[in-house]
Amino acid sequence: MKAPALNSIGIGGSLVVLSSVLYALTFLPAVLGMLGPRINALSLGGLFDRLGLRSRNRTPSHRWERVAQGVMARPVLVLVPVLLFLLAAGTPFLRVKQAVPGAEVLPAGLESRDTYVAIQQEFPRGETTPIQILVDVQGDPTSPDNALALAKYAAAVDAVDGVDRVESPFSLRDPATGTPLTPEQVAAIYAQPASTRPPAIATLLASYDRGSTVHLDAVSPLDAASTAGTSVIPVIRSINPGAGLHAAVGGTAALGYDFLAAQSERIPWAVGMTLLASAVVLFLLFGSIVIPLKAVVMTLLSVSASFGALVWIFQEGNLSNILGFQSIGTTIAGNPIIMFSVIFGLSMDYEVLLLSRIQEAYRRTGDNRESVAEGLARTASVITGAALIMVAVFAAFALADVITIKSIGVGMAIAVLIDATIIRVLLVPATMRLLGRWNWWAPGPLGRFAERLGFSHVEADEVADEVADEPAVESPRPAGAVG
Image (cartoon, rainbow, N blue to C red):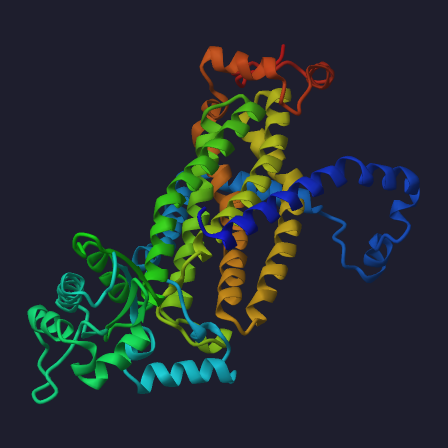
């Protein structure tokens, strides 16, 4: 990404993950070894038993297994409405309008924010946030040739739709009628000796002229943070200032346009690389080409649903009274890609945990339906617990007064909740039931390649030992299966 803020978030997040992996592989085992059996010294299990909070008839794993079996008994009846719900939840994102906001994202009551809003409401927008243009010339800007070229360029900018007027020493008006002077009339004024020019010319030059650089202000009635306001920028930049002149366009509207343009250029690459890397890692772990594709599609469904919620809540202002914010009418640029990165990582984490257990059971039994039920039963409590922790962390962001933080937290809390419940509990069992043995399919050469690399967490001797204790089952083997 070209935005330094997004780059720093990406680098910082990567370092945190690498540090966590290093901690989990080194420090954590050492601590567990030192504690030994004392790790459960403060267990609350006995207290739960005395209070009657723990069921004696059915363990949580049995309940999750029943849920999985119920879903797989009618997979189509579960799959279709869930898909329709997720697709419908993501449709508001089709109306997304990203913008770089101003001080309106700050909480009401702050002097800087209230002053900014008052100025935007009570005074012409273009007066406070004009489109700023710097023009470099060769030689003296007031020379006849340069003055004529600068006046023609200012007139061309003035003629752009969305520009009300241009303020510069080369955009002059008749003091009697207020009509703009032609470039030739402006050049004729500068052809006069400096002592005979109108006094206002010297004042304008002192404000807008710095040697060989001239400053122009293009005043626009459009909101600089709006789509219409930023759309003026490429039109102005397309104007040829003339021979010997070089123009650079800046200002609030240009900042928003350039940020969004940089996002549009880099985000497809960032998303594509994330999807490809995730698919490759999942293939190496499970030796299947179906599992990675399914995992990517399901993760994109949960991400799109959270994006839809982001637009529906924060851009369109729904639930604003409950969450305590005032909608600014746009989605803050940069928030969607930040959310995508975090949500995709968490979703893949849950996916690997669940599929690892399912693959273990499938390699041992060869029964797709029972393997899915067993995998969900053994991981659902862990995934749900981890998701609830993340939901609580992200939901705490909803207490923030700054909309930027509040919207990210609420959006990611919704995404994790959807992923850990609707996706993992309903969509995964339904799709794996329908796909059957195709879940673990891969072309022969690819399957053998994944097996040779040995990234699978299921070792050959573990599978052999488990199978030896059970009756043989005639069923398709997953790609890369041992034995």
